[in-house]
Image (tube, rainbow, N blue to C red; front, side):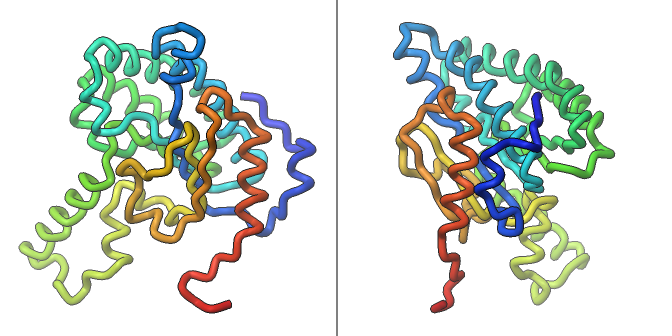
Amino acid sequence: MNVNVNNEHIKQIDLGNLPKHVAVIMDGNGRWAKSFGKKRIFGHTSGISSVRETIESCVELGIKNLTLYVFSIDNWKRPKSEVNALMKLLVRSVNNEIEDINKNNIRMRIIGSVSKLSKKIEGELIKACDLTIKNDGLNLNLAISYGSKTEIVDAIIKISSKVKKNIISIENIDEKLINEHLYTKNSKNVDLLIRTGGEFRLSNFLLWQNSYAELLFYDLLWPEFRKKDFYNSIITYQKRNRRFGETT
């Protein structure tokens, strides 16, 4: 990880008007690999550079929360060989980057239905996250085996259980309480959502948290996404008029 706080692109950005939480749907790895006549895993491997540059950009700017859609709960439907290759790549990539993650004061968390992971994969990811537990810089959420509808259902179950046990009352259920029971309870709601790959949908990603997010869609495939694209996304975000239902 090569963090450069003197990056020329930063001069074009208002550091007082940064999104508190950026979310990214990293789409297009398979199609990118196919364009080179390669297997899909080649695209996923190549996309690691884009992940690294996105994280570096957040550190350089001082953005506090970044959530990356790594593996959706519906991705389990893919061929077993591809899923296994993805899981091995994920663990290897995390282990390779963990030293730099710590060096840059990044706190890493896994969000999603981790119980669906193999015990070995789950253990490796938890061990890596534990190594960053004291860091208080960028809060990096890796959405793995993640589905937003499942997240919301889980939150309802947890809240219902507490109501049943008289820990909380129905009258106390509000948006704040629901936020506290979501996987992203340690992050603010999303301000900016970026999706590569030329698709125009949320794909069951942070549906609650994206309620007032600014949405940016790129035709670029994920392995093509670079720092300049991330910085341009921030510049575009800063040109938006975020009214939150108001008239001005």
